[in-house]
Image (cartoon, rainbow, N blue to C red; front, side, top):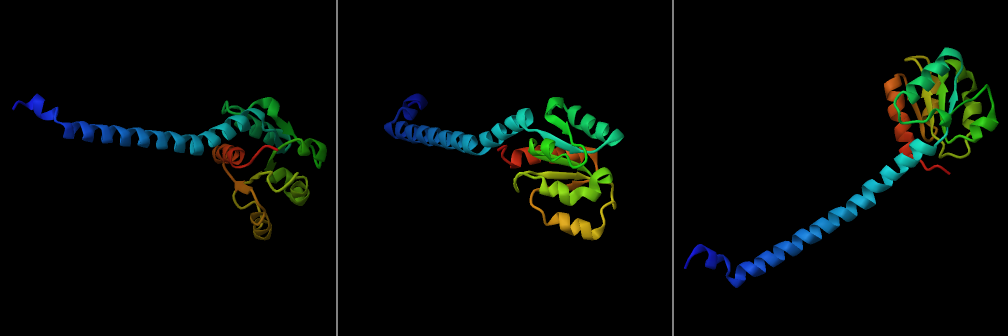
Length: 169
C-alpha cells in the first residue's frame, strides 16, 4: 500500500470534513465577535472625530495652544472646536465635550459643570501639576466623566477616549 492510497482511506475523509467544519465555525465566531466588539468602537470613534463639538474654556495664548494641540493631530476638525467666553452657556450647550483650562477658568468650575447637558458630557481639565487645591480635586474627582491632565499629549489621548466612551446625543 503506497502513501497516497493510505490517505485516501474514508477515515481521513471524515477527519478532514470535521476539521473543515470546526475551522469554518471558528472563523464565523471570530468574525461575529469582531463585528460586535470592535466595529461599535470604530464607529463611535469615526463619528466622534468628525462630528463631536468641543467647547474649549480658555483664553489668550492658552486657547491657541490647546486648539493647536488638538488640530495638529489631524484627528479633529478646527470647525468643531468652539471657544467659550466666560460663562457663555449658549455656545457650551451646543458642544458635547468640554475642555477646561484650569488656570483661566478654575474659579468657574462649578458653573462649567452646571452647563453640561447631562452627565454624559465629558469634562477634561487641563491643569499644571499642583494647580488644583486638594479640596477642589476631591470635588472634581467625584463628578462623572471628568478627567484631569497636565500634559498636552495626554490631553489628546483623553479627548479621544472621551469621544469613544460617550455618545453624541
